[in-house]
Length: 437
Ligand code: ZN
Image (cartoon, rainbow, N blue to C red; front, side):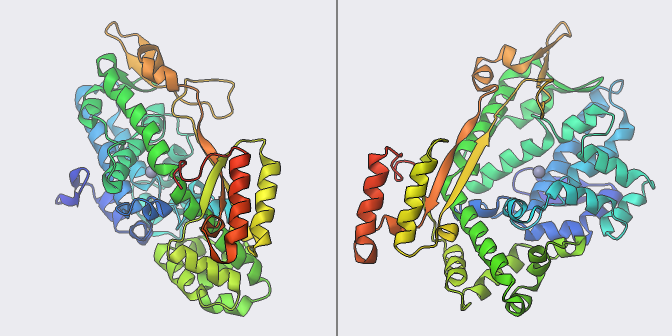
């Protein structure tokens, strides 16, 4: 086919010269990714971060294509070119099962975007599956097996999903570009010069150690500064409470929800087909929230307004054994008329920035291997003091969210404000302002 190009703000031109890739991009399931934001509620904090899953998936495909181009040319004895199409296709489709506000949906309705990714790839009803079967009848299952890590060639699996893979490389660069922050940047050109296939995985020449180290640090900083931002999480818990309220009201108000928000009914009923899942996107959801703003249920209407108009909850971070203190805060919130089930929330975010391979761990990780001049392998944190400091350490926090009104002065909440604030300071919670939100 004639080469097509997609103009991309991160990678500039993204060329597509394989008809399978081009046809996959044109399926309805892939086009749907244009209507799903990559970072969900983060755009309430970083307003530039409106980019879509579509652009990220194209970017991951592009990086996979660049890496296998290098492997085919420089390492023809170690890389089998018959794996190239599978690698590019899986890179393109790795996130196709993401839904609107996936993470909130997953915790509330028990959906799993990785399961839906495999379903979209293997279900004979989808356009994606029809395109994949043109390669071979077994091809959809090969793609799904890379995604669930059971594919035998670990070179392919690690390129798509490991502690340094094309997925992470793209999202760090893309999310940092669109958020307007610089933390996620790293030296991609250098990494592409030093990446190499091994017999059973991938590795990097040790003279590129600082580029790999910088990538690990960038990822850590993006988690701390962007992905775990307290205000984005405030919007996430608000959204979850809003949907929880809707689901509870659904039992007694089926007609209202069937009319105002039909595509959510299967989720409320816990009977979700692939079609139901694919019919939701950010636009559909946002329209429903606007409709709910005029609901006769005061809590539903109020939460929908708060979400749509970005009225973020405030928060404080707390320690694991603070549950009694949180119970007091919930009571104080309740005492001024806010139902704590919908107007407070706990949100925990933790990340392990890097870890060495631990065979006994339940989710053991593939460690990053560096190749020394004599050809022997050495694990990254053995070479990098900085990575060694982060290795195996958990970072993040627990936060308790509550309405901003608990802290605003005057009016109806004057007394409660004093109570709430003095309780927070007496009990040595972190100052909410100091903590960001
Ligand atoms: Zn991804």
